[in-house]
Image (cartoon, rainbow, N blue to C red; front, side, top):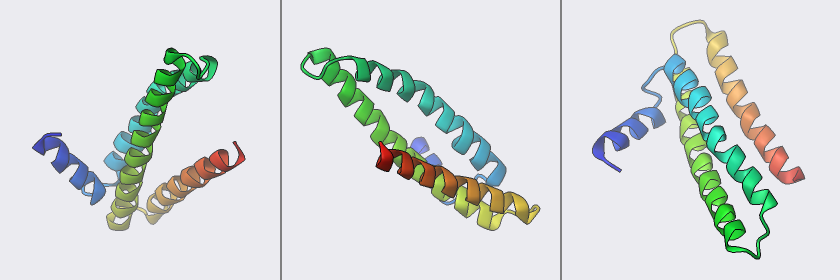
Amino acid sequence: MGANERRMIIKLWRGQYGLVKTWWLFGVLGTALLNLVSAPLNAAAAVHPMDEIDGIMLTLAALLVAAFGLCYGFVASVGIVRAAQTFRGERVWSWLAVTATATAWLGGAVYVALG
């Protein structure tokens, strides 16, 4: 990872992109792109048996993408909350951003817990 990428992640973590850009670019678009990669990968891993090398490799790839997604989601979520705290517009947008972010994490936790 280069210096530019590190600066971008730090700026995101601190919420310094502002609420609108953090929410739409990193929260919505970033998550959608990640889902475009993870959904077909998970589907392919689900249909390949684990006793074959293809199934093992697909499962490992899906786990790596999931781990990256958790890390990305955590950093983006912290950035959204911090950007919401400094947002100068109508407070309802800050509240909605934080509430939607918390709801997404809660929904993900319930999904994982219930299988």
